[in-house]
Image (cartoon, rainbow, N blue to C red; front, side, top):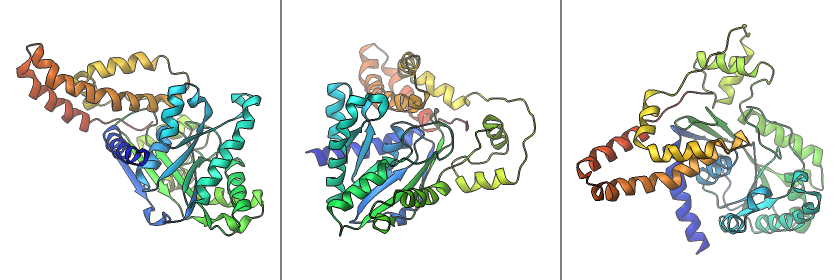
Length: 336
């Protein structure tokens, strides 16, 4: 039951992601291990969008380590557990809760011991800035604890980088880069420094890096030059060959198709505006926007086909539905 539900949900979310984003490109699919214990270590910039992108575009039956705060509501906790998410507790979740990580690590070890796949965001936090932050020991602890219990297991570390053209807007590009896996066994027993260094070396080229100093100026310059921010190598090459000039920052609004799309989906857009004002962490902007679209866009289309006729607007059904779909598919936003 759970596996069938997850398979169906995975397909639905994959389809919805390709409506939400203008283009999702995946590089390095040939590096995906088959029939092996795989611990995926990825960068983290865009809240829950990051894990669902990896889950739907890697053909691996993933389990995820997810921030414990998402499990606070009992119903949410059951739903997240059902779709293979496991809570990981941090100091900010309360010192008393840190002991619960023992159960989290035990579940993780069991998954990997059965040649399963586990995703962890090695930085231990998320940030909209395009860079790879220092990796924490969490993934190494899971790897070594797994090997403590299964010394003969071939456990692979798989680096994956996710890069966004625009973290907060729909109608933009995403680049997913799958690196080459390497055996954690090489650094066992418990060479934390070695495994973290090796993972960093392999993950860094997969993640777009823009210096924090003059970050907005670099963004403006690359946008003016139409540099694809989802391509780490292209961004690196551009930055290394350029100098910044002191220019005033400018910003461009959404394209016409984006504005018209909102008109044809105005109830969904109103819901988004209501939720938008309640989002405290900007990293969750795309997550809430995507979930609202995933839930309410289908409801809105159902209302067009069945609600419009009941209101006497039968002649509007087909043209409204057609134009809604056309502008949804043509939705586009610039990089930011």
